[in-house]
Length: 177
Image (cartoon, rainbow, N blue to C red):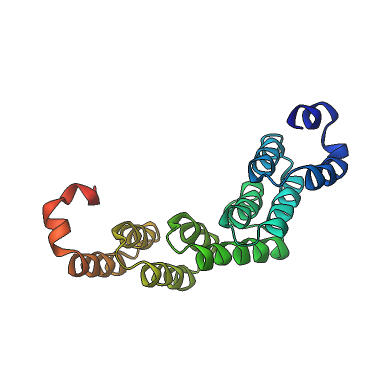
């Protein structure tokens, strides 16, 4: 099917997707097809593939994460089209609900907030609340503040991490470098 898709191009993608829906219940095929479209910078078509993936497998994070990534690949860090931005945010929040341990989803949503540091901070607080034993989340939260020049807030997050993980940080200071 991949060979056929490449040979016949995006013009027949709807027909090929319909064929895919009838012939396969294999998530790998959807991922590969979305990847091929992404490589050709056909982001809208790749989003359609991910939408079909979500429709067939709504309890899996890959579809939501994939569709959000296609939006962000097209326009990073935040799409000008508010409908697309809203869809990407909704998809990333769905990833949180299904699998709170996927730190990258929180990171992308925080980045999408641009200069709205309060909104980004709220997202990192959600991330820490969802998985409080993830030291990396504290580090990324503090780095977000540092990137925006708010060193006092960054220090506050680092201090929270030290209180949360005192033995771990004493034992392995390299984790913060």
